[in-house]
Amino acid sequence: MKWVFAVYSAIVVAVVVHVLRRKRVPSVAAAWALTVILFPVAGMLLYLLAGYRRREVQARPEQDRRGRRPLETLLLRECGSEPTLNNRISLLHNGNNAFSALIASLQRASRSIHMEYYIFRDDRIGRTISDILMRKARSGVEVRVIYDAIGSWGLSRRAIRCLRDAGVRIFPFRPLRFPWFRAGVGCRNHRKIVVVDGKTAYLGGINIAKYYLDGDDLGKWRDEHLRIEGDAVADLQRLFAADWQRVGGGALRVEEYLAGHGVSGQVPIQIAWAEEGPSRCALTDAFAAAILAARQRVRICSPYFMPPPLVMDAIRIAARSGVQVEVMVPVSSDSHFTDLVSESFLTDLLEAGAEVFRYGKGFLHAKLLVVDERVASVGTANMDYRSLEDNLEVTAFIYHPPTVRSLAETFDRDRAACTRLDTASWERRSLWRSVAGDLMRPLAPLL
Picture 1: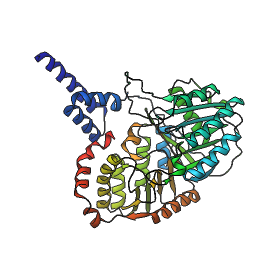
Picture 2: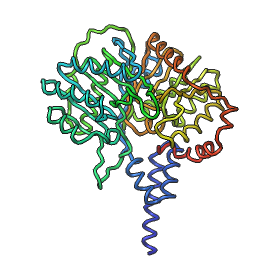
Picture 3: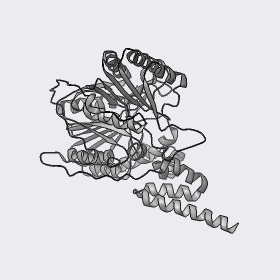
Picture 4: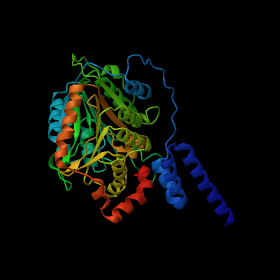
């Protein structure tokens, strides 16, 4: 039995060494290493499924920095996306506006519909969208759909079969096939992208689910989404093409799908994303850089607030430097466990001098960053480890002051539905929640 124990111990040590070498953020490495040491079998299995990622090393081309904002240069180097100027953008607040605009675009599609969502429900709104997709596919429009296998767990085989029978090409992202698992199953496609006819695109926080219209046990869902026309659509088309090849759909010639748009809206937009490879830390770096560049005010919305150290440190530095930092989170989210951990981070915000607002008029699901009314981001990434270090995400950085001001005004209106935390009352909250949040905080990278 001694040799069995020796082999077993050697495997545990090897896994811990692998964790410490691969996970470059100390807190993340410590969380995984501790999990493996305390729960060897379950910990190693969990790391293989959710924590292990193949390291993809690619050359980052040198880029000309002249005339660019530092944030633009950073995203150009990490994502390879240029800021584009000729765009028109519509801000879609909540599900009613987003679904109305999306359905209108889908119904007008004449050549192609490319769509990917984290959650695609087989419910009232899901069936409405599916009916349009099937009708368009039968009429000769090329319809391609990617859905995340875990996020869209409730999408029935019957619904998928109906779509395929109608001519819709639909693929899951990283499906689970029991009893065989694959490494990296914890990395999910959290993007929400639609590109219609290569000239109109949608992105933001809204999935295909009826609770964005009707609400649920958490109340009405508050969210932000974008409709984009113009040059920036090309980057979203390229991103979809890359994801399509990733799920096994084959290579797409992007230039065949792009169409002339005739837009000269002078709205600068830069599309950024996070995925394996050079762009893995792009959104983490971009959020931190944008916050540190603030001179007057930073506004942040996120349904889950457990940011990696780089982003959290940037927020603290900004607040302690005299910048007005406002962070808005929901009173409660759809995960009570993450709520407890998130509360520990809110304590740090208050200690740094940031203002914290808890949205109580339903569930705040918007992912929004506004800096000095000069730059804003709207997209799919939450301010947490899962989005910024594991998932596939996409965000639009907007450098158009009138649009940025409109988003800032939306944030300010939402404050009317919030309760502002003050340090004195926050310290008097339930002792068990405070202790539980602090004890579970090391697990934040695993949530």
